[in-house]
Structure formats: C-alpha cells, structure tokens
Image (cartoon, rainbow, N blue to C red; front, side, top):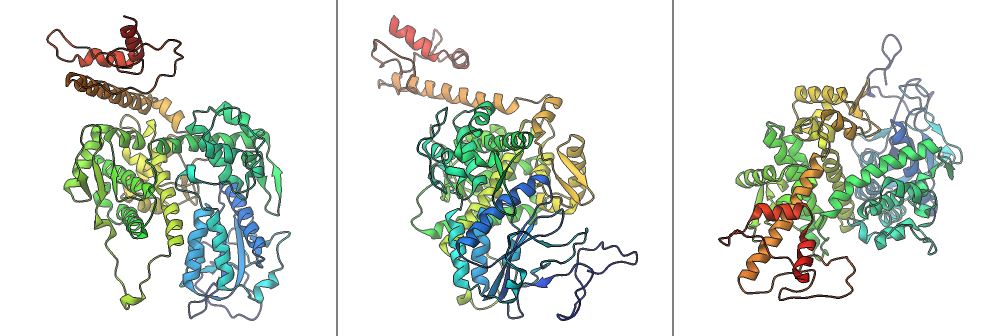
Length: 610
C-alpha cells in the first residue's frame, strides 16, 4: 500500500511491487498465494470478524478448523489479522492445483460461516498479508500463542493428498439439508433427558458431549429442534444450563485453545439472538417437504445451476425484479420456489398458495398473481394444475441456467465432483433461507415498511458494506437503496458507520413492528389460512357424504374416551354434519364461525350423544 502525503493510507489497494529480499515495507503489504503457473503455495483461511458477533463466530470456526488441521497433522500458523479483525490460518503447500483448492474452499465454506472462501481458490489475484505485517488501521498481524512457528511456511510440505484429507474431514461436519438426517458430531451422553419432548434428532444433538466437534452448529440444531417442538425461551434457557449439546451457550472458544466461560449477560444475549433465528427457520422447516433420495446427480446438478442462475439474475437484471412492488413480490416467490427445489432435490415441486404465503410473508392472493406473472413471462413452468386438495406443481425455467461463455475446448469442461456439489448445495440453501427468514416479518408487510425496505434488509449482513455493495446485492438502483437504508436506520434496523452499512446485532424488527402498529399481521394471516383449510376439508367431506360414501376422518382426537360411541359416519374423529340452509345449500359463513371457535369436536360429540 502507498501512503498519501500526510502519511495516511486511504486506498485499499496494493499497486507497488517490492523486491523479495531486503527490509520489508513499513506500510501494509501482501504476498501472492500462487506462482505464475497458477499452482498454490499457500492456503490462507481468512475468518472475518468485523463486529463482536462476528468475532465470536470466527473464534468458533477457528476452533473447528484448527482441530481438523491438528488431527491431520498438517503444519499451520494461526494469526490475529489485526487488533480489531479476525484470524488468518496459513498452511504451506507444495504446489497444489486449483481443482483441489476449489473442493477445499467449497467444503470449508459449508462448515465455517465466517470464512472468506474466495481466497482459497483465487489463482489470479489472490493475495494476503502474511504474518507480522502491518495493518492499514493500525497494529499488525500477530502470531497467536500455541501456533506453529512462522518458519514452517518457508518449507512447504503439504500436498494435494493432504488437503483432500482435510476436505473429507470438513465434509463430515457439513450441515444436513434436513436436520432430521443430521448426526451428532461427537459422543452422546445416553443418560441425558430433556425436560420437554423433542424429535429424535433433537434429543441426540441435545445430548452431544461438549457440543461435539462443532459446538456452535450443535447448539443451533438444539434450538431448532426446540422451536419445532413448541418450546419457549424459558424452556431453552433451562436446557442451556445443563444440556451437553448446548455447551456453546455456556462457554466460548478461546482462540489460543480450549474454552472459557461466558458472562451471564453475554450468554443470555447470545441465546436470545440464536433462539429468534431458530424460530424463523422453524417456519420453513414445518412447511418443507421430505428430501428426495438422489439416485442420479444429473438432476441435482441442474437444480444447483438453476438456483445459481436465479441469484445471479436478481443482481444482473435489477430492472426486472425491483422496478415495482409486484416485481419485488415475484422475486420473493421465485426465491421460495428455488429454495423448495433445492431443498427437496426435485425439479418439479408442489407449491400450495397458502404454504408459500406463510413461508414468505406475502398474502396468498398476491402469491397467486405472482405465479401467474412468472408463468406468463416464462420464468416458471406449470407441470400440473391444482386438483382438489393437491397443489399445482411448478418448475423453474431453464432460462436461469443458460451456460456462460466458455473459452477453450469442450473436453476440458468438467462437472463438479459429487461431494463438491453437495457442498455448494448447502451454501446456496443457507443464502436462500437467510433471505426468506430476514424478510418474513410483520414490519415488512405493506402496512409496515414495505417490500423495498424488505429487499434492502435482506441484503444487509452483520459486516459493514458500502451502499453500492448493498444496492448491487439487492438489485436496486443506488438511489432507492440509499433511501431504504436511511429509512431502516431511522427505525433502528440498520447501522451506519464510516466503513458502510450493516444489520443491527440485536433484532429490533418486532419492536419496530409494535411502533408501527403492525404486530401480529402474519400470525393472524396464518391462522386464517389454517381455518380456510379446515373449512375446505369439512366441505369436501360433506360432498363425499352426499355422494353416498363414508367421509374422511379428521385428525385423531387427543381427548381420553372411556366409552367409544359410533354412528353411521364413524367415531368421535369423524366430521360433524355440515351446516346447511333450509333449501339444502351449504351455510359457509356459519361453518366458518364454528371452525374459528374450534367447535368441530364439540359438534361431533353432541351428534354422538344424541
């Protein structure tokens, strides 16, 4: 870096070359990770930490990475990149090819959320400040206590085979697409019992000794299982005191090794933030269909390509997806369809209007109009019409997976290896789920801040980003993005700093929703959809009975029945008679009143008593 006339460094660039031998520069400097032939001589794991929350995550990721490198007996050097930054983990390589590095980067990104994975496979401009070099904001890169001596970087010995072993170890920790298929990352204490019921996979993670090899991920899965099971914050606070799998909420990883206790305030704040995130993610989990077993990876490869095309289209063609409020709704519905296809591993997905509405926070009537617009424009294909209780089946158009320009002979084009394909799939799922979770809130409904503010909030991260970067990620014109950022800042949903904009560490969305008077809109809307489904099922049962057939049963009753009474329609779990007017027509308003008051079981009990 070159200092200006006043001695201050303001430009984040490295334009000046410097001889290898001699006294190092006084200003920050970097070294290339590759030689001129494109082979890697260093693997640099850059764990970003620009905020307190990021630092805690980076420290947890550092513990996971260092344990893997030590188990593989690979030499490495761990540095604090700057007094206020994150960590750099250096591994000396003996000239490794890019294909191996790409697999390592994909596997590491799926496991380490704070990792800037681009440096692991950038063979053109990849460059990092080595240990002991100064930082532009003051201080220097410092070798941490307990790390290998920096001299190990001068004698590279790590081969491609060694890195493939590290890649395999990272893939063992890769998050499962469906939490129900995830396995504990360490031994399980069979004596531990949760004080409330959990699904089997949740009980296993809750009993994982010391949180296993990835305490942060294990703790989050415990919260997700609790959210799915209907636990409250008080319940998870009680479990966090003793549950082995929730070690992450009692202690934190010490960068120099081992773990240290958290303060009571820090532990409570972290648990509350993660609990909010788990509750948001549980909404998607409840409405996610079962993952399909993958026999032929060709279809999954196509799905991954299409989803990558969708995300690229949102930024490359902002005029199509952010011009009007309808466009913003279209992109939200398209994001959900992309998530559904990637989550199930199927090109053709059934999407009920009300399920999409609950998962996205967009009204069902608006979802219906978005489906029609996307279908007419050719962005999605309808494979099957809605038929009675069966939802319409949709597919993302191949327009999103148009191949880019290829330079060179086609026989040199290689598909992603299967393991790398699953790594990329997990990373894309996290991106899509974060978008849906961030935007699905009362505060971003039409009566609140609206869809433009929602798209801008979805594009913010906990790290500072320039307004231009936020606008590009949101696919919004820069003027509209700046106006939305100012509005989010006014409502304490975004923080401005000299380095850029970021989300607040604490989630203030519910607080702002109360100020705007929009609290409970999505909850009431979801209850309305549940009532409408119950009314529809009751009406269909009525039509079946009129045709002379026995109707279907409702969800089995949970009440204790000492003497089971039956009639021509069945037992207590059968539907009651549908209310009709004197001319035999169904009285849907009266039926809806019974549904909303929860009186179906009471009506059925009276019929049997009579």
